[in-house]
Structures are given as structure tokens and as C-alpha cells.
Amino acid sequence: MSAAAIILAAGLGTRMRSTRPKVMHPLAGRPMIRHLLAACQPRFGRIVVVVGPDMPELEAAVAPHDVAVQRERLGTGHAALQAMSQLGGHAGDVAVLYGDNPLVTEATLGRLLAARGEADLVLLAMRPADPGRYGRVVTAADGMVERIVEWADADDGERAIGLCNAGVVCAASADLFRWLSAVTNDNAKGEYYLTDVVALARAEGMRVRAVEAPETELRGINSRAELAAAEAELQSRLRLAAMDAGVTMTAPETVFLCHDTRLGPDVVVEPHVVFGPGVTVEEGAVIRAFSHLEGCAVKREAIIGPYARLRPGTVVEARAHVGNFVELKATTLGEGAKANHLAYLGDASIGAGANIGAGTITCNYDGVHKHRTDIGGGAFIGSNTALVAPVKVGARALVGAGSVITRDVPDDALAIARGQQSVKPGRGFKGKKG
Ligand code: UD1
Ligand code: MG
Image (tube, rainbow, N blue to C red):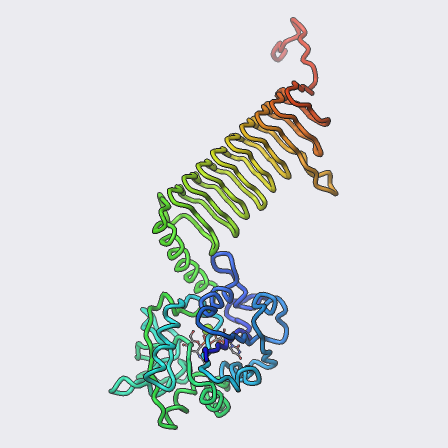
């Protein structure tokens, strides 16, 4: 029988000072709860997330997993008990995890489950550089865990213990729910502590063991500063994975990735590049400094930036160039096409080899609707052209600089739409009088 997991996420996250549920705060582009679910899914056949009564956004984010609602927030032990109707009859192990500990890896969860072979109750523990207000793990001389004491209830001697509770426990379902049902709220905070199951297990003569893992995986997130520290940890994992897969990063510490950023081999990412969700960059492409990409695909050997912005729905085909201060939205830039300077291309399709001059703007929005611009392959759009959509410019067409194009231009045609220059001899600037 595979193990099941209960993830506690009903807390208000008071220390975040936010109207959002704590576990919905994003890390590397997705809510922290989804990182934890991703680590749990391969290890647990069933997952129940304990949510608060007023968290529709969170319920949607954890779908299709089951939820149990904790109507009153009476503590972590009480929260775990809310999953009893779903998992009380589970024939295998049940683990309890905290939604605000999202950095734990699948490998560490595997070690925890394996340790159940030697103990009736197992838990994850760490030795943080600063143990702060974590619960302390009290062990006996033989290494067996005796109990966990919460910081608020600990005396000075207990606070001096370096081994801290990470907030993951695992036991047979029947044992776990029996102990949870016996937890009381007789403590400094008046809460039902999940951590009290350890002493209850020991009172029954059961064996309790701690599995240690690095702080970088087990740190909890209770404040914005801890959220930033967790982001830094995830970013460094993502950068290392990208470099291991053959990506060159000149200054990796300045590049920000998303959990789903896909970078092919021999991609070069220059300093200060930000990847939002949904970006794929194919082999040999170069993302130059200070570019921002989200929801887009960059094909082989394309060059992006410096200072480019690619917005959702954009496809930059092979060997195309997007230069400085160019923004693309829902636009396909054809193979080998170039938009090298100062342009906005939105809701557009641009053929292979086309050249988009500096200052070209697709006027795609009339205040109510968005309209498309189609530019054929090999077309040359002169500088400072306004393309008033919906409009089509044919293949190999030439548009004169400074044009405002409001009607379709056929293939191979020249279009110029600008005021005529007039020259009046002798009427030049005479300078100030007096
Ligand atoms: C908890 C542990 C502490 C451990 C630390 C690790 C307890 C009593 N203490 O403290 O030993 O060192 O985590 O990070 O368990 N939650 C609910 N319902 C509640 C209360 C909390 O669902 O009524 C959820 C929260 O959403 C959160 C998790 O349980 O995801 C942990 O709660 P939190 O208040 O953050 O506990 P800590 O003080 O961090
Ligand atoms: Mg916490």
C-alpha cells in the first residue's frame, strides 16, 4: 500500500502580513504549495491538503488533490486531524507535511519513508545555523527521539539544542490518528501541537527516529524575509540545473528563472535576465543582458536583447534577432527576421527574413478590440512606421520610413504614406532680433 500525505495549509500566515494565504505566495513563478505538491506526488499515492474555510484560491491551486477544511485554527495537531475522515482508514503510512516548508526534495521524502523500516514514527530534522524559534528535538543517549518541545514552551537548556523539527512526520495511519486524537492544548500557546505525537508515541513504548537533512531543504517560511531566502535557494538550484544541462551563464546570480524555464544546450544567458513562467529557449540562442521573457518560445540560434521584452504568445523563430527596446506580444517573428531597435510588435505575424525598422509600431488596439498585423516574408518596413491594424503588408513589400499604413500593401509593392516635404528657399531661421 502506498503512503498518503496530509499537507497543512490552513494557517493565516500572520507573520507574512498579507491578505493571501501564506502557501499561495509564489516561489520561482508558482505558489509555494505547488512546489511541495511536486515533491510529494512521486512518493505519495494520495494527498489531502488541509485548508482554511475561506481559501477558494488555494483550493483551486491544489486541485485535483483532496482538501479537508479546518474551520477553526486550533493548531497543527488539530489541522492534521481534519484529514481523518479521508485517511483514517488508510491501510499504509500517512505523513504530515507543512505547506510552508516547500523546499523539501523528493529524495529526502524517500529517505523518510525508508526510515520507517527502523522506527514506528519518523520525522525530518535539521541543524540550522540559527535555530531561532523552531521546535527543538529532544533525543535520548541512544539517538532515539524522546519528544519535541516548541520554542515557546522550552526552557533555556532546551533552547540550546541545535537539532530542530522541520515539520514532517510519518507513521502508520492507525497510530498517527490515535496519537493525534490524544493531543491536548495544554501549552504556552493553547494550541493542539502536531509535535506532541512524539511524546505520545514514546509513552506507548514506540520507537521514534529523526532523519536529518540540510537546512536549505527544510527551512520554514513564516515571513517575507524567509520567503526571499527560500527564493534564493530555489534560484540557485535552478541555475545549477541549467548550467549542468549545458547553458552558459556569465553571471548566474543575476539571472532569475521560473520552475518551468526550459533552456537548451549551448544557450547563452547574459547578466540580469528575468524569465517569467512558460519560456522555452532552444539550442544555441543568446539572451543578451537585461531582457525580460515570459510565455514565449525562442528557437535555435535566435538573438534576444539586450533590453528586449518578450511577452506571452511570442515565438521568435530560428536565427531571428530582437534588439534593444523591442517589445513583442503574441507575435511570431519569422526565421531570420530582424527587429533590432525600438519597436512594439503586438498580435502580429512577421514572415521569414523580414526587416522591421527602428520605431515601428503595430497599432493593434482601437480602445475596444485587438487587431492583427500580417507582414509577409522578406518585407522591409522603414523606420518609424505605424501599422494600423487590421492590416496586411505583402511579401517583399517595401514601406517608406515614417509611413502610417492603414490599407493592405500587396506583395512586391512600395507603399509610402507620409506628408510631402516642402522646401522654401530663404525662409530659414534668422536668429533672435536685438
Ligand atoms: C511548526 C512546528 C515547529 C517546527 C516548525 C518548522 C508545531 C506546533 N510547530 O512551527 O516545531 O520547528 O513548524 O517550520 O507544529 N497550520 C494549519 N492550521 C493551524 C495552524 C497551522 O493548517 O491551526 C499550518 C500552517 O498553514 C503552516 C503549518 O501548519 O503551513 C505550520 O504552522 P506554523 O504556524 O507555520 O508553525 P511554526 O510556528 O512554523
Ligand atoms: Mg511555519
